[in-house]
Picture 1 (cartoon, helix red, strand yellow):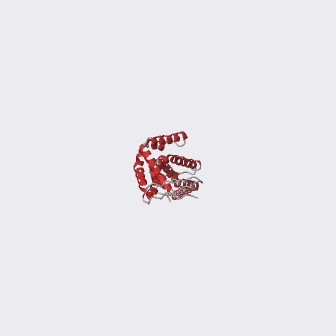
Picture 2 (cartoon, rainbow, N blue to C red; picture 1 turned 180 degrees about the vertical axis):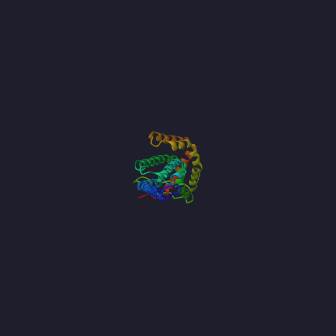
Picture 3 (cartoon, one colour; picture 1 turned 90 degrees about the vertical axis):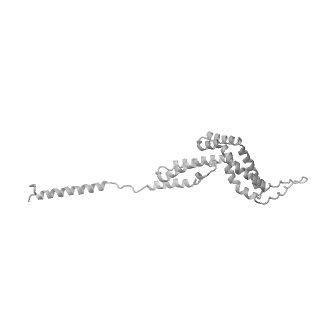
Length: 241
């Protein structure tokens, strides 16, 4: 039999079968040589990201502190870096890189600790509870006289201050602490940007803040009030031993 174009039908049928067979072989060959796409991050990558998340837990909350010596803006920058690596780190982003980041934490914590004595808003938070308790309690009695050597008079210890005195000191500290912070503003701004690996620059930052504090009448008033409060609170503590 012949097709409409005069070609034998059996030849056309054979040609079609050959073409189909070639297509099947070609598709099978392509499927056999293709490599499967990776289904997700490797175990090493996931472990590295977990290490970054664990590191972030060590400093969680530091970025939300409000006292100037907390250097919260620096912690916010660090938190952003940690958040990035916690979801995007490669398996090669741990090891030395993690160690360097942890070293940066320690350097920032050290600077913060050196600045805390000048941070009257922080000091207010430290003593406020105990000062309020003292100010609303009966005045403590005078301590017992110190033992004296034979032939000498015993030393009479002064009576702790009146609660009203501590209430007044606490008011002064509360009112003047923000003003002291404002007087120190250039020093706090410097602490927010100083290069932590530059020990001389860090030392100068602390020195400059100390100078600004010495020039602030509000800081002087806070320091006096703080000393009064601490002495009163300490007098109520039972001696150790």
